[in-house]
Image (cartoon, rainbow, N blue to C red; front, side, top):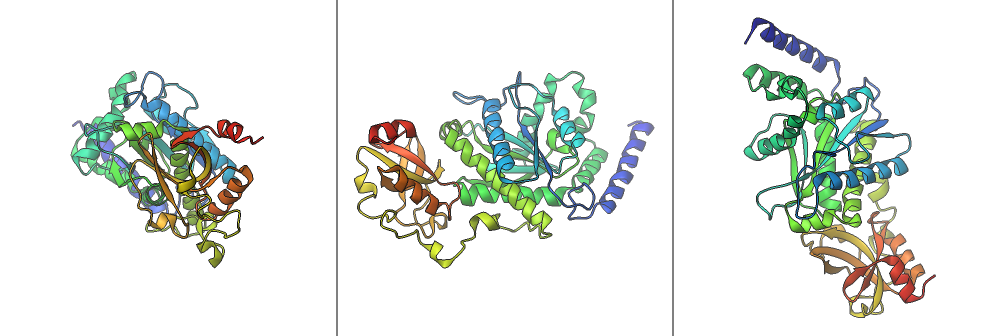
Length: 395
């Protein structure tokens, strides 16, 4: 190692130590104003970089669909927060440019959305990563896979010399640098995984650290989400549906909202179960049971034994793995029914042929599960709501 090169490492160490002393632990890196005002959403891959490949899908298309939904939910439901995208269509954006966008925008959060892949076709579930030094072979291989896109860029060896350098000095610099925003990144990652596991019915594979280029170059709390496995047929099918993408996106949105609420309230708690106080806390004890009005009661007139022909239901959750009907996810909701459609388990209540009644039921259910929505089933298969309305004579 040359003297100049070695000197640059020692200078980096000094700068990082100073930064660690300047930024308070509860700061988002934008000074002492602990506010979430701007979020950069990064749809992984794109253009000439397809990402991981499934049997019928490219990662770049799934990440874009989910990312746009996350942005829509944040824009519609969190006033005062601006959303910036690194891409909104099928274009190739270099990894360092993605981080540059976040840095130039002075973003308060950076979220990169990806889809996992594995040789084990049975692997499934979600993981959220923060920048750091990979601690096992799995995270090392994943980081190498995601980072391999840099070879599509011109002069990548010089642009990413800090990533490619495995010297002990670089190891120390990298590990110190990640600690600047590590606490906040870990909290956001924890909230995301809690939402996936407890609310979206996904397998929680945990919060992990890995040396991702796109995270390493950002100057704010940043996470990279692996939303599922494209190599698992069931998960690929699930993520290809509008419903699956909506559930994944809403989980990420709720985690962002929780992170913002906790940060701005001065109580950023890594061990929180990530439930939004406004959305999830029952208002009164009567919410422990679904409203017992005649037109909402889940009895023999609208349970699974009456599912002949076209039936309107309220869907609570969807998962590639079975969820016990006595799970706390469904606490206080009676007569939950499990359906398996195209390899995906769907959990529903009610069976109505009247749009007003099913809408009223949806309103009550949403007091406990805000993401619940109406679906239409015909002879055990899901059909389009508009088709169901026509068959039921609903205008």
